[in-house]
Image (tube, rainbow, N blue to C red; front, top):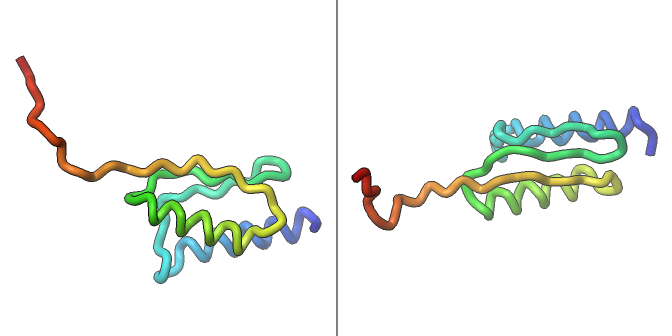
Length: 83
């Protein structure tokens, strides 16, 4: 695969993330040499797994490194002690 084709596939993946059915604008997609780096924070582990599945499908054959964090939105288990 040549660099132009990889750039096209990365752009298509970015568009896929932005479309209504996915609507994930918090993921950054960067080309780092021969590797694609995915960074960002997602609301759930399931959402992260979905993004990784999409990356595998859209970017097959291109090495992908993911640094995707899952934000914990659960309420605290106990109150904070400020004393």
